[in-house]
Image (tube, rainbow, N blue to C red; front, side, top):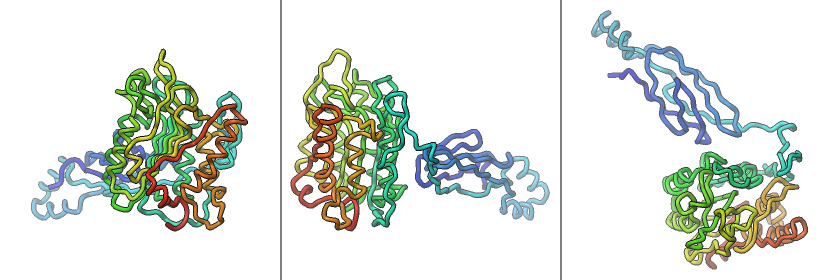
Amino acid sequence: MNKSLVELPVNTNPPEAKVIVGGQEVRTPGTVRLPRGRGDYQVKIEKEGYETVNLVIKESWDAWMWGNVLLGGLLGLAIDLVSRRGYDLEPEEIDHNLVKVVSKPEDQLIPSSAAAMTTASDVDLPPTAIVTPRNNAHAIVIGIEEYQQKLPKADYAKHDAEIMGQYLTKTLGYKEENIVVLLNERATKTSMEKYVEGWLFDRVEKDDSVFIYYSGHGAPNAKTGKAYLVPYDGDPAFVEQTGYPLERLYERLSALPAKEVVVMLDSCFSGAGGRSVIAKGMRPMVLSVENPLLTKGRTMVLTASASDQVSSTYDQKSHGLLTYFFLKGLQGEADQNNDRRIELREVFEYLKPQVERTARREFHNEQTPQLIGSPDTMNKGVVLIGKE
């Protein structure tokens, strides 16, 4: 028999939207349990970067109730109405495709590190030419600009991640439901663990591709010499307890059945400044983001700088320096042979001298991006745009 509560599945494309209905709040995909006989329910669906959706779940009389009338007469009908089991809700499931917000000209203004405003970067509009769909590609995109512990801002990190997510769908052919974007307070240590160690393992199958992007602070562990990503709720003074170790990231990714994994880190880990932080009283360190797993596995890592360097933000372009030239390469600058096919190696060969030159000229700083991976994976090549 019907119960007094209706279990209503709630799904959105892309997932991780906030749904508010009947005084309840859930993240998609999820389920809400709504009492029968309370009338219509107003539904509100929200996700950053997408249009807000307002829906109505209408109350109706359950069809099976009429059979109960035939069997139990008016007494059966009265019992159903009093117990509220005679009511149903329509639709029986919420499954909604969200629509991205189209920025207006006045919305294209991005605050710089100073109080002044600057126009949007020339890489902020992804090329939307016909691309080969990549149905078996999955991505986690993380951008943390502001931290719970009031750490120095990682300027433009949130913007980096937002634009990277758009490139994945519009330029690289990823399906939106195969991408998770975690920004600022959404990018907690628990969230990183949830998606890297849970979500990916539920979705990735043999011969799939995985792309992990991180823009934000890194930190060293002064006791062990290991490198950590700093989540939104991370604390460099307790980095072993609150940070996400690069070593752990590589171990989890190496266990995936994917044919290739690309990790892009627009961060640094020395604690010497830029996109890195360190516990008070500690001195900057020289440590490596390399790992023995990378010398023989299927993972390739693109880092913003060498281990003893600082990764810069490019104020003029409102992005991390590495991210800006990576996106510039995807716009076609990296396709030096004009074959309409761009590999990770081509992008690296394009951006490395560009980053080095810009860091030297603009910031009087040495910044040399690194591409790390096994010789077999490097020689095979990872296709970003075009047919594999």
